[in-house]
Image (cartoon, rainbow, N blue to C red; front, top):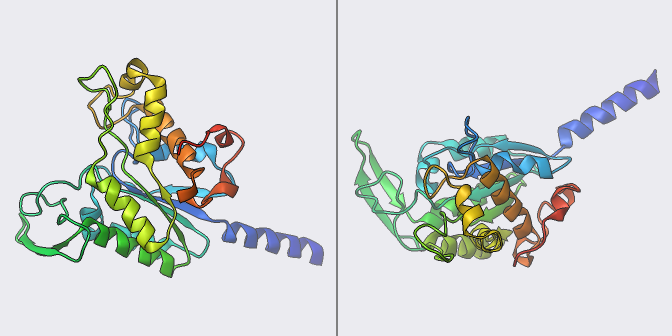
Amino acid sequence: MWFKLSFVASMAAAVLAAPTLYLVGDSTMALSSSTALQGWGEKIPQYLQDIAVVNRAIGGRSARSYWREGRWTTVQASLKSGDFVIIEFGHNDGGSPRTSDRASVGGEGSETETVTLADGTVETVYTWPTYVGWMIDGAKSKGATVIISSQTPNNPYENSATIINSPTRFVTYAKNIATKKGVPYVDHFAVSISLYTKLGKGVTESYFPNDHTHTNDAGANQVSWAFLSGLKCPSAASALKQYVNSAGQGAGARC
């Protein structure tokens, strides 16, 4: 009886100690109810083992709006030591804070701008790296590992016979804040461009049936595969390496 109780207790402790991977981002990562439009975050679990995946990405969000709405606070409250968080923003973060409730102040410093939202709320807006830096600090305070991922590219063959490789400023911001904070970094933009170059125009464009930003189910799988390739690059610092299963091991490094 003692052995049985001890075994049950040890198994329960193992379950409680199992890490969780949280995904934080926008619609390009988020769950969609339609296979015609799917975020890559819904495809990554099939390539992982011994780790739970919780997709907290929400369509239409930027680093600023995700923070303002308290969504990051909810994620941080759920974190425990040993967990992982992938943070990826950029598609909705451009523009002026005066005309968009999603845009951050330009630059990478401590600049701020005070704006009044449509509902009359007065908000102090910060730079993109400030919001993401706060998220990194919050996750670290809980003992979690943050992986900063640059935004995915839009359809790089749109209106072009050859691939267009034009990273946005948020790709640079992502790399720089990861370096500054000393956390793993995946250049999801670059590894996706590398994969799309290999696949060619016809195949790549079949992944964007709705618009130039959102992939379908097949495209989401390719984008998650690209992320796995990015995990094998030095900047990712071997993050999640022990949790990639045999299927995911097939993703070659694209650095």
